[in-house]
Image 1 (cartoon, one colour):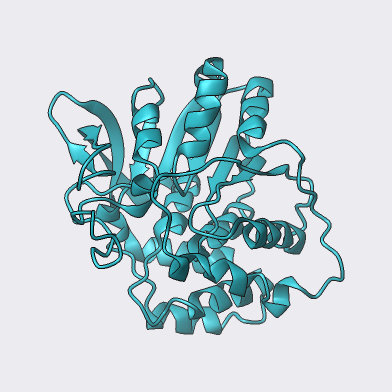
Image 2 (tube, rainbow, N blue to C red):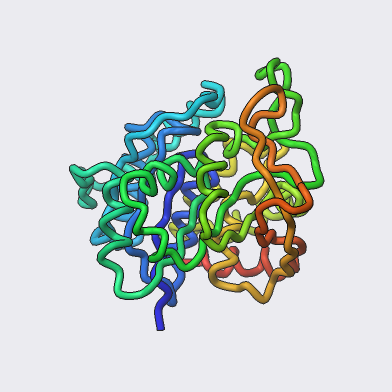
Length: 306
């Protein structure tokens, strides 16, 4: 039986690769994709997503732009990657884009898909949770249609990934997807939705390494590997990790992972805004705790060899 999945991403390099990986999963019934305007410029982010769906021949998947806003914008330096990737030759060989963009907003699509779903849906969210928070405010009844939320975000026992020189009002404890809109994270935390969190604690163990890039380069004859290699070439000079791709792989191979339960709270104000704090008596979530790194690397290379 195919697993019904609704995806939300926010247009960073690894978000597109998460889309690419998800579309290779035969056991997933991808009900739709929403794009949140966070770590990107939204027009090229939408364009890239449409072109990826064209590339993999899945032009039927509903796609919508979320019309939401966060509190703390991502730096322009990060967001400009969407402008570059949108110009990649591999994504611009056809004269026209086939995959349509829906007129309804991302939050409206989320509400509609969940209400129409025959069985509970897994939400895969690899950016901020604002689209979900807004959808819940619009239609509280959709909570009952969510089987689980798999979210790439937060940091539990490690430092966050916000450079204090870029955000001097932050103390370095928050992860960017949570910091963009901490109030939305807190809104979701106040639901009864089952949450599987993919925090920096685990993603710090899966860097994008030169050795991995060399293996990917040997698969350049495959379009998906070629696209992934071009995307990673933008970020390999910096410390970069398989954030969203790791979270996505959990849907295919949960046996690669060990999970651990934590009691948590979300800090919404002050210098720790966006921190996902361990707090005894707090909201219980499951976090991806360990991963078989070798099996993970081998899996994504296998999936992109097409």
